[in-house]
Image 1 (cartoon, rainbow, N blue to C red):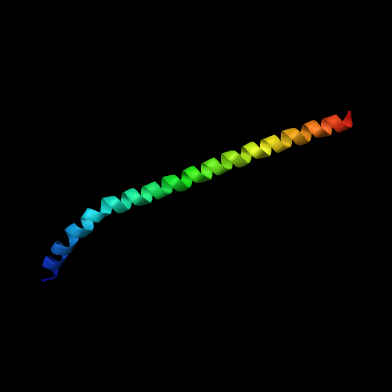
Image 2 (spheres, rainbow, N blue to C red; image 1 turned 60 degrees about the vertical axis):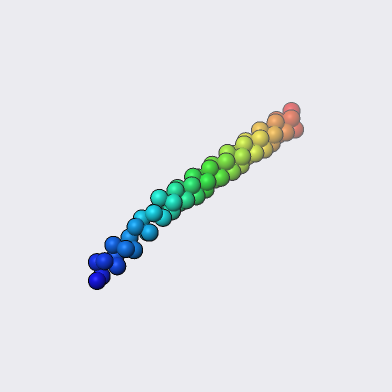
Length: 62
């Protein structure tokens, strides 16, 4: 009786597995992309800030 119930229940679960895997993969890729973009933008702003500060310091030391 238990085996029959498992055989009936399994295909419905099996149909949803690829969708869940795809969803989790998509979520992971989105999170990775967002973090990568934010870190790149943050590094860019940090580099611009450091360059401007260095040029200001050189200008004031002259």
